[in-house]
Length: 379
Image 1: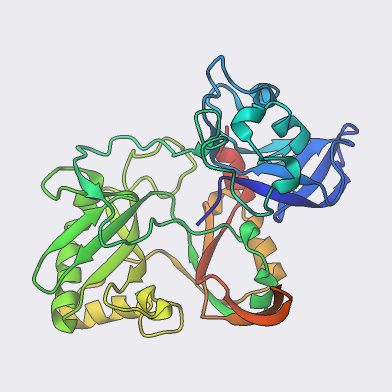
Image 2 (image 1 turned 30 degrees about the horizontal axis):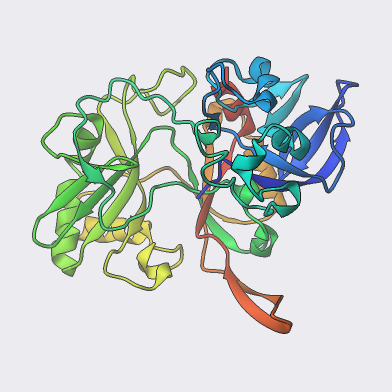
């Protein structure tokens, strides 16, 4: 799941080609415009990512380190990807001196600069409190009546792919074939069906009442019978996860996914509730459990096709592919999602004086966002 802010090291710094008083820092693979001489390579900073929001930013009691960000963020406190003197800047780097210099020491207790955890999220109760950082949610319009039965049921996670820049050791995936799909700019929808006919329709965070009229239930209406047919035929529950696009739901004129006559569900993933193996449970690419296989099975069972997100094909994953989609032109859309096979690798570490070997697994899917699209959203 994507982080909104964490403590990170500056990986590289180079001159800004169009501004003598600015430099281009690299943090977690993102390019961030900073003041010249403000940071050095290896410095630890508090890195606030695109689409984070500073809590309390529009109030008089904001922290001093937030004040200088007013011209950059405006009154909303939303962190954006912008172009500064012709160069993309993705997020904000805050020095630890600025951050820690205004913390109430009694409140912070032993929280000091030397104790920060790299790649760790901000400590709970302090920066995540009313002065802290949260996630900015894009406003959705004209969605209809919303009545929730509760949060997401059956312990299913929120639909939130990590950005490629947040993934360490992603180069270990180089040379592997991945399925590339276009990332649609709509709203997340989850449909859960059981063999006995029960079903749920969910937003990104909530389980909806199925009798209220809104874009999620309208998009799900033709899909629910297909999910129920699969669940009955295989005698297993199935979770279909997709992006719903609907007319006039979002305001941005350049969003090519918003002008559809009726709310439409576009399948991009499945979860198999009865499975304990992670690769089967989450339908890893290259297995019989992947969403494209489930779509084939639904067609065989019902004679009807379930609409999926646009499939761009199987590509060999490498640095050139990443750069291609980071630099996608605005008219191509928000970006892509890479669906990956199960790839594990070993790593060495020390524990209580002993040399050990562990196993890590690379992510099953992640997104590569178009920088031009992110910059357009910020205007």
